[in-house]
Image (cartoon, rainbow, N blue to C red; front, side, top):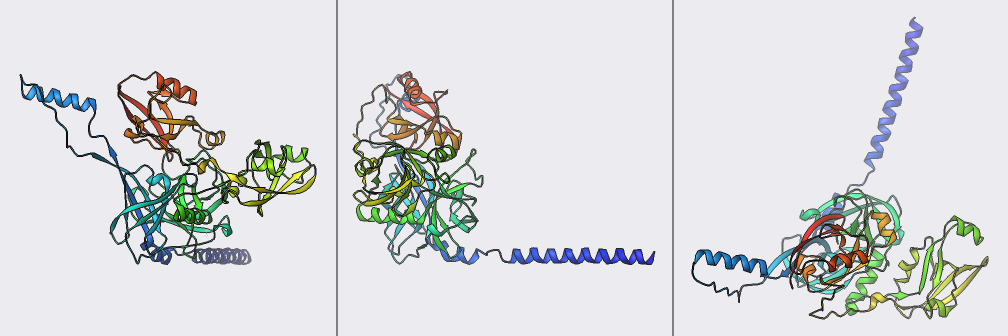
Length: 473
């Protein structure tokens, strides 16, 4: 009996010792987790909040009629003299986002969608000073904007190399989620090279995916590595509710540096064009064409007289490398092509008939390089009664987001802009009728009444909202 008790006691001590060892190991592991306090303290002075305002019409037919009726009731027998000349223009508070200072003389980076269409932009510094901002340049395909404020001797961030980021690396975001200034959130890089729905019809972006808690208002803020260097600019979230679901996307810092350099030089960004329609190389295509494993971009069609056609690239070629950038997935190709300017000569490695072939291509000019000019008084024909044009959602967009609708591609003066719609908004319903295609949207738009208010439901940054369009003859 004593021996049995002794054995049991020895066994208990062994378990206890093991438990202490395991707890000690866990504690040591926790002690090695990064402390972000110093990083936040060093970089917070460089982070800014962006607020915008836009002008809206100060009168409407409905409001005027209501005012006339009120004056008649107050002054029976007198015809109201409604003179609103001189009434100041009304202003509406617009987007609130984040940004950061990149030079001591006041250059600031934020997202294009934060400031696009704004009449006034204000930059709120960490020391509570507020400055009106000048727009140096906007770039919709990358969703980046470069601003300038009239201040000097400012603290600014340093950029890091986004190409050396690895899945699992720690990162930290600082911004103004929901207008809560200078909030910090940490996480890890959860994926690289993500192609997600953007606000441009041309996908030139390969995002960094993180699990950092990014919410509305974080847009345009920096993503830091553990060395305190900016490796990304927070741009989008993937959410069905508008809040953080642990999937956020950031623009790589190396892309931002290229964009900012061009915006500072001439206020716009120029991207190269290859001129191919492509798709993924799946297992079946790899087997058919004798590849060891699926990789690269399969050329479905070479556009006639395009740079690709001129260089000798053919249909059913598989592009494996573009100018020393390995093409693992087909979405990598437009991203790398977009990093070079028109006229650049690039080496393209292709797989054709079991052989590796190199072609030299001189890049053309992307359609995104064309600066659109908008007439100040656009004609509202039957296809565009609301003052904006729409495009179809891509198959990829529908698969990733689960949305069904159309995207606003261009907006000018009209009911849409007056209601607060912006380019990139996804319209899912108009006048309480679901939208699934551009043809259906046009049909419903042409059946709208000549005047009055109609509802339009949109999705913006993952959040749904309903707005009122005011139609007038």
